Image 1 (cartoon, rainbow, N blue to C red):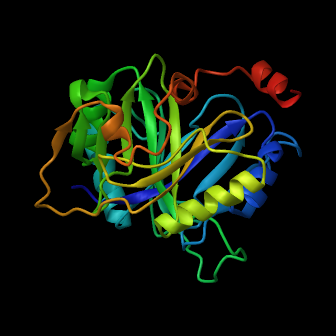
Image 2 (tube, rainbow, N blue to C red):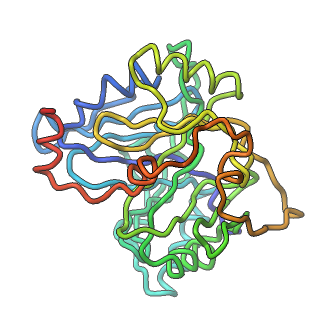
Length: 308
């Protein structure tokens, strides 16, 4: 592997970030770290933390189309520099850096684009939280993200050959490819899609019991699951999926497998039984699949959605 250590955060876009702030704080359980001024006072970049030490795990940004940015951690500034050289060797010149930065928790960082145009940030030495979060519930960290890909071969090659991820498992015919950069079974998953977009974002809680408590809390808030509870075959994690107020699919998850270098990746049949080995989730329905397809949304569509 290269010096990439973990998945830090993801930026998602919405017409006005403040429209999602109440949901992600009161309902989902994150807390605002800071607001960075945007083009106007109603459109700041809002960075939000989970219960763990990571500076932020989610940023709400103004615009249409997600994800805006995927942030990865690196072992050191030297690892960031080394990755920059690997990128240049394949013709992927960094857009910014590598170098010191003052925003988003500071540290040493660079940005570049993957073969499908996703903005990727790799950083080291980012400020961490030492004080516990003032919430009795909520995610501990960002677990994984699933990306809809129009060119699975190019994306898989880039994340493995250039960024140094390893394939943990895959569904037959590469209907999904699970990628890891540390001992967790996966932190990025590629799924074939009609467009390059965000399939879903998964946030980790401490246990299967906490997944169920989170489900009860979400239902009490009037936000029921669209899929789950259940347990996946690949990765072995417990899951419950929901939809945020602008249509992004988000997941509470726990008990993702931890693996080491002795792990042997395998192919899984793409069946309902493997998608949920408990058989409790109600099945991966066409409505769930359509939500995860996450078609591109224009700024006008975002504005109309807010008024509904």
